[in-house]
Length: 106
Image (cartoon, rainbow, N blue to C red; front, side, top):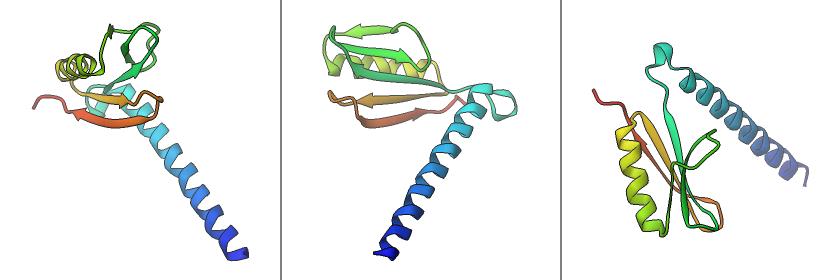
């Protein structure tokens, strides 16, 4: 039992460390500078009105579309045109289904 607690504590610590590393990475990317242009992150998520495309940290949706299929098509076009960008597609329950990265043109 003590060994299981050590394993769980170690896994929890690794998860916290990974989350902290991700937060640092996001701050660096948002700053742009020597790391290149800042990456824009878009989320496609369900709302009462349909499927919302929203830039991370934005107050308003870029667009609201009636179906998820329409939302995916529009969000992919938007992310490609705003590269470097990342698109996070959510399921109807709000969990993440897929993520797509669109690097800056060379």
